Structures are given as structure tokens and as C-alpha cells.
Length: 210
Ligand SMILES: Nc1ncnc2c1ncn2[C@@H]1O[C@H](COP(=O)(O)OP(=O)(O)O)[C@@H](O)[C@H]1O
Ligand SMILES: Nc1ccn([C@@H]2O[C@H](COP(=O)(O)O)[C@@H](O)[C@H]2O)c(=O)n1
Image (cartoon, rainbow, N blue to C red; front, side, top):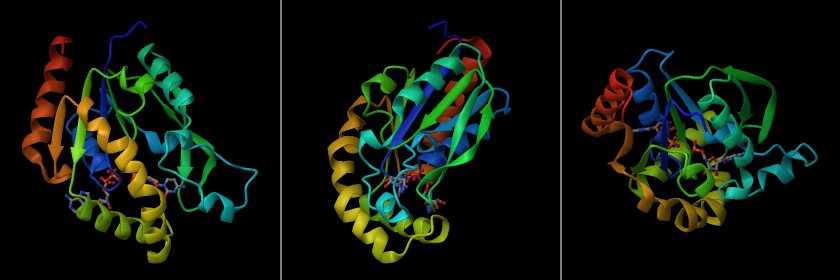
């Protein structure tokens, strides 16, 4: 790979604050220097299934994500090519027809529950971050977000949490913490940790070295 960019991977449980941390990082830079890619954009589409069938799938297992496409897109960005990033609709459990064109940048941040759990993706990262938030806080945030933003009911969130979210977190996401270079407790609130990562990325952008 002809790589002259820096890849930062941010993992952590659902509701841990990965997106908030990533957005805090992105907002410290010019948009042409840093891009953010979410693993969520790469959920597999299941157009042959009914809405009811799609709503019962396990979305916390690595097989639910098209990691081959995510990897190809990361390699394309590293090689200076733009990508057509899928757009995922959580209310419909499906990809939208349209996509977003993302231009390459010097720093590429990738966030998602499984980005450190899948070796093919993990090995691309120069810096690996795990956002470590208490399970009760993650669950409370998820309940609120899923009801307000993802069209879910309290009962559906509860059922999904117990049947797939929690067991898959314990099997895949939480053990991937061991691969992290930096562990950020509490997520988006942790300005000290976020500022340390920002300082590191600024050094890279200035000197071209990690
Ligand atoms: N420190 C925090 N305190 C309260 N709510 C938060 C905090 N961090 C994130 N949230 C909220 O919790 C939800 C999940 O946060 P998000 O950053 O999207 O987590 P993740 O990407 O890990 O699922 C969002 O609605 C967000 O606004
Ligand atoms: N159709 C879908 C697809 C995914 N999920 C849940 O999203 C979570 C990951 O997203 P975060 O932004 O919270 O990291 C994951 O835990 C899936 O259960 C879903 O509910 N429906």
C-alpha cells in the first residue's frame, strides 16, 4: 500500500461515545485534512428480506458488516482515490440508494464497535483507540438515541440488547480493548484524552511522522 496518510481506529461499545469522540477530533482540523468513516455505513443490505425479518437480525456480529468493502475503501483513500461511501438507514435496517463521495485526506478516522475486533481492519491502523464507558451509561444512552433517532420502542431496544447487543459486546468488542494504544474512559466528556489525541494528530500533520 502506497500510504502517506494516518489511520486512526476508534472502537468501543454501542453508546460508548465513539462518534462523539471522533467528531471532537474532526472538528479540531480543517475538513480537507481529516475524514471520518463510520463502520455503521457498511452494514450489509438485505433487500430480499421483509422489514420484520431485517429487524430481527444480529447487527452486532462481524458478519453483519461488509468489512471487505470497508477495507477496499480505506485502501482507496490511502492511495489518494475518492470513495462512494454507502449511507445506512437505521430506521429501515437498509442502505439508502444514494451514497456519499468522500475525498482522501491525510488523517482517516474509522469508528465502529468492531473495528479493533476484525484483524484485517485492525492491522491498517497506526493509532488504535478504545472508548471505555460503563455498561449502564452505554445502555441508557442507547435507549434514548434508539427511541429518538432510530425509530425504536423501549421493548425492542430491551429485547435486542439482551439477545444480541450485550452477548456480542462481551464476545467481540470488549476483548478488542487489548489491542488499543489509548483507552479513553467515559468517551466524549474526556477532554484531556481527546486533546492529547488532537495534539498527536497535529504533530503528524505538521511533520508527516507519527
Ligand atoms: N458524555 C456523554 N454524556 C451524555 N450523552 C452522551 C455522551 N456522549 C455521547 N452521548 C450521547 O449518547 C448517544 C451515543 O453517543 P455516540 O457518540 O453516538 O456513541 P457511539 O458512537 O459509541 O454509539 C448520542 O445520542 C450522544 O449524543
Ligand atoms: N439495522 C441496525 C443496524 C445496527 N444496529 C445497532 O447499531 C449499533 C452500532 O452502532 P453505534 O452507533 O451504536 O456504534 C449496534 O450495536 C447494532 O445493534 C441496529 O440496532 N440496527
